[in-house]
Image (cartoon, rainbow, N blue to C red; front, side, top):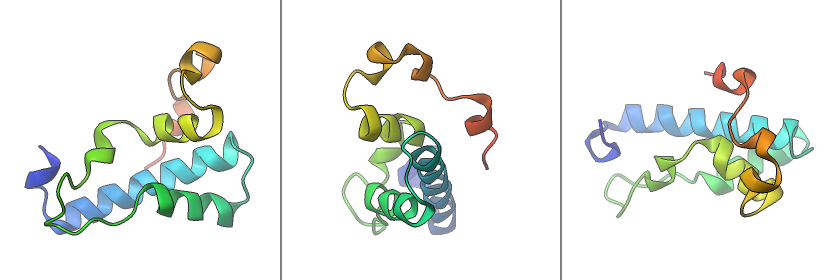
Length: 94
């Protein structure tokens, strides 16, 4: 189901989950304190109104990817091939 067809509750739940996963990566791999990781997640994943153009476009990649770009910049998957895919612990986050 595309983001454009999501109801508000579904969008907010997905947004909350992506924020949680992004903050986890920023704490675990980026070394940020919990409050700083949460702030980074809110910045990366701001709430978008239901009529916003391209609402939810950020969801086209995993929070893992966006966090790795923030930590290691472009081509992190080449420079750090061990980080190309998220670990099982990340995948287990709800």
